[in-house]
Image (tube, rainbow, N blue to C red; front, side):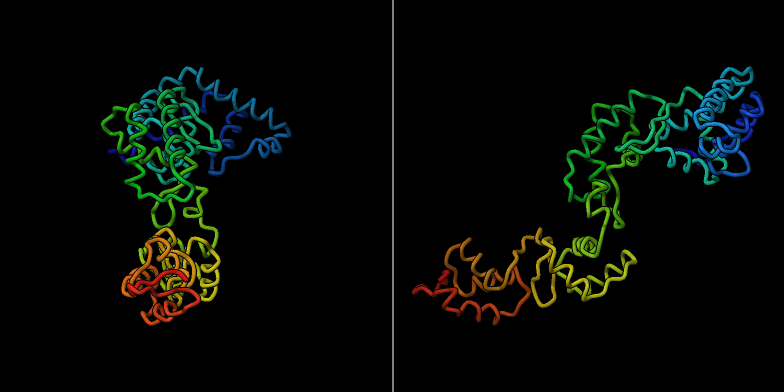
Length: 344
């Protein structure tokens, strides 16, 4: 288990390191990394405007200052802090989401900034910058990081745009990708943390995982919220109940009439009764009761009255009499001598 605290004081470590460099360089680093009274990390542009220099010159001063710290005589006195932080990162999986890792050590924004600076100035830690696929992350093992990246990309490639998975199912899939990568007995714990590195994977408000771009994860309107509500319910719901559930689960107001209008226009839903909606993926077919009867007869061949009623009731929440009225329409269906109905 990862401990919640560290034995060294990050501010003392950084104070000692900063004391070894020139005052102006020190001021630039303090502003750049939020090591002073303000925890905001200043941009190159904002620092440049203070000293009346270009952003590129600020970058040069920053790099010079970090190099100077590494060459200072007192740099080695911080080895114990570096080693402890390195061990902490390895206990966390060896490749970590920057913010999640810092959050696991402290909730204090100021101390987080000092820890971040310690990571920056020690070569044991490799920063991997944010890109289209991954968040800012750090590692102590570049080879491991590359293999985890590859496994995450493979995992995402095998998830469909509309797929939703429980966290345990997603981790099980991920572990299959990792089976030849890590033999660490804690790989199951690491896998959950490594998922957070990916920008392509996210959880919806119901705790289900999918691709970040999926409408089932990043909801864009009432229809997407309604889909999750129905999926969680597992059976048809009246549109007014769907609206209430959206408000309950997601804190989003949904007027029943608006909900009804949105569902009827979306191909994911099917009206199966008076105001009752189901998901097409459950096996329900679209259309009127007559359309359903026609489809069933075409699929199964001529059917008796009771067979028609039984099969339609699995597709629609309607009264038996409604089914019989449609079945007696001679323009649509015909009854053979064996009392079976066929399409007219």
